[in-house]
Length: 493
Image (cartoon, rainbow, N blue to C red; front, side, top):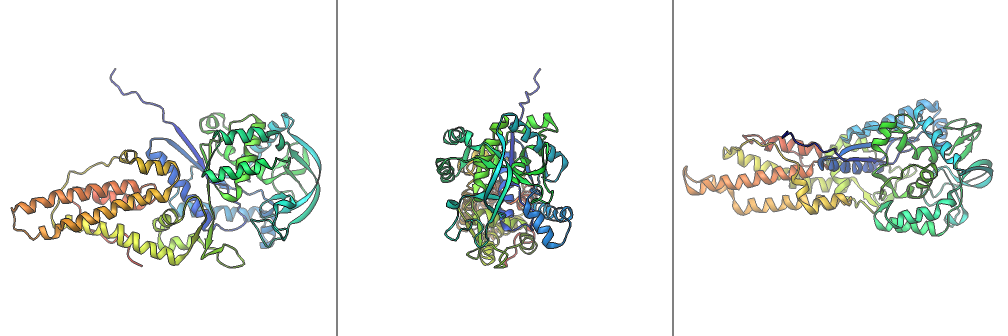
């Protein structure tokens, strides 16, 4: 038969980190959500079947404390906060295929299953423990890992608690060599390279076994129960990392789990690299499960040059920013202005400058000019169904996105915008419009506009992963037989 052979699509499963929901989302969460969404959209256009997972890390001691401070029941507190994270994603035009909550019964069972698999391998044992605990990180620290004041680097100004209790431990030390080999050989890839070297440096210090449970008394009976021991609850990171598996069917839907796991990529912030590059692979190795393929590690935001903190009152609320500037301008600013790999500074002043320069005067102005020219010249074209494959033919663009260099990919697109502007300024089609009917020069305008429209269609496709709404608007305007001008895409601020 001459029917086409349909090849199975390759799958691409990626995740954001699972945010703690002890407070409302801030711009750092919005940045990570947008980065993950761009990767997903690019993969989709490349022909992969994609799944993007996020969720809510709800079993932390700090959620219990935050709920107590707010005078609210823990369940009600996490329900409300988890919802604001889902709302933020919707407002950013991000579609999470799965939003897996840590309080979900299915997730509790999946984490108990993971525990049992590690235990079966002899990797869990019980002993007395005394140590310095940072509630912010939900992590025990050694004295040599703290700053001069004896504080954690992630949460300076917050004293650590000295805690002594009987806990279950995981034999992390047993997996030191195996994890080192996996990272060195890029079987677990870490982008960018300097982060990979950071992890290898940490491994060089030697791995100590880690505590993976907390007393039920200290967690106020909140969190996942340790199988067979009512007095203990699972350490939040042991269960939170497992959201990546429970969300795609681990222990509940074997077929779905086999289809999607292992994750192709975890998108995370630099502060939680140890959990994802060391602890998580060790738990999975112990349980005899497949390991994720790669980590993409981004930096942090400062706001107006200072670390975001509630005390300083400089925690930028992404929901307010979207209401004021719109979704695509915020997405653009995150992706163009902030290096994907190092820390970036967020400032409203800079957001407005970038908006006016790149979006209002750059892209928006080009769209207005060309659509107006088409209208004045009665330009007609054969309506086209635009083909996304153009993306894959632009090697630099594809390579930039394969390496998560979002800013470089956008630079290429805006290079095309500048080039087209220059072309129009040199060709001066508005002067050709003044020619008498039937003149040779008037025919030239057809080919000038045809080229301009073609370029704009291409720009719209390349923008799709970054600014989906804008891309859609431009595409629908410029693929019609008759192109007419419309309101400014980005009115100047």
